[in-house]
Length: 390
View (cartoon, rainbow, N blue to C red):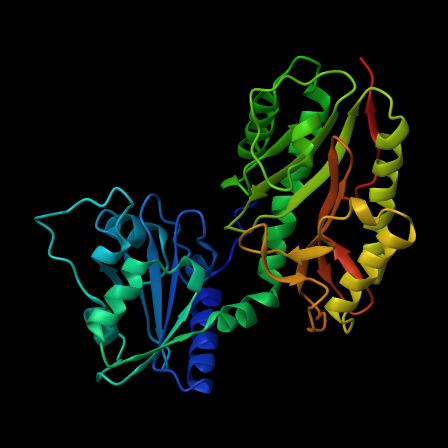
């Protein structure tokens, strides 16, 4: 990996200032963003810290000061890996085993807010990543500030993260490069009788060998019946001739996690499988042609649904056509039929084309960035229909 492909410290600092401006715009005193090992994106956006077992949070004041909140075992870890100097240990961010830590003298939200200049009791607290804020965190905030007004503020993070910087796009492109290598390795290695998990092992070896920090998602190597799962996990199921095998592989760089997805056929395609693999690719390329700055996202989604119906595949539609891409492989905003936002330059998406068959499913997927005239494909173009003969 080229070590220069990363988010620089200056950009993390600017993100805090951008957030503070939105805190002021909304008349808030402080923004609290929470995350976990699995949903780390909003907290890592400011801190570059990705917790293990425990949770974490970031507090940003209206005047642009910031603090990182971690569980009892993560103080040194956060100081070493993160980019925020103010690190506080709060009981609210402990792991799910719920240890008592009888010797611990934890800090509180009051300590955190005081350090970043938030004083008084009748304050307005914006909480983003609402779905990642558990009851313990919320109760802790209410106990520390019983007179505060607590406001859901998810839209702040969506606004901040939707338009990517050049550094973010570089991280996505580097991760996609590594993912392409893993995809090629899996296609070269697959044989009848291998398990789905053995293919995952091939992919994992390739991404770490080529510079990834981690998998961008649980590697998708599904076969036949499991390919109907929109989301799932690989298993010990053995791959057989005649199966459709779905790959969706992803490498992570600085948290940024694009995915490349395609169906493989164990043998020649025929019948419904051939028909839907080809239609899925056609729908994928239709979507690609619709994307450019200024287009209304919901219009793309409505057109996508109509494309399925007009071709006689309405019953094969599950979702689509695109979802946001960034610090995790699926992030806001999605393109849905009720979406109203316009596409803007440097928004990044996964073109995600899922087609449901009678006893199988398939997905064509790749990462793109929006440009004025169209898109910048962040991986190599996909579209080869792989019929593997042994």
